[in-house]
Image (cartoon, rainbow, N blue to C red; front, side, top):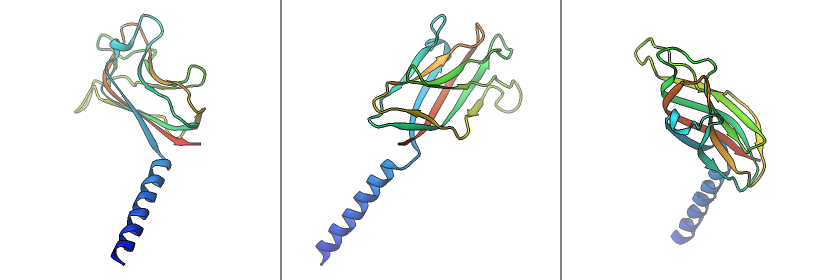
Length: 150
């Protein structure tokens, strides 16, 4: 009887684990140490790659930066962005400008809110940096992409 209960409990735990891995949101993360490290002269650079084995829908993009965008102690215009793309479909989220006030004057965050951007199975997804104003920098940026399986 104990073996039967143990097997039943193990089956329930394994099925819950499998269920948890296929329900959302699922996360893909990337990190930018210094924005300039990923900015070739004109088009930006890739800082993370992900190839889902099934079709997915990106449902939210968020970022947290220890150093928001700035250029020579002033705010940038236009702002640099992080982009989720497969080369055709894309979603951009601006890296906000440093506030220069308050307890953490350089720290910023941004949130896309709820979105729905679909990508097909085996898409070669990239997180890239899109340049803003010339000389505009930011750093220590954590990017989180939430997605669900289609």
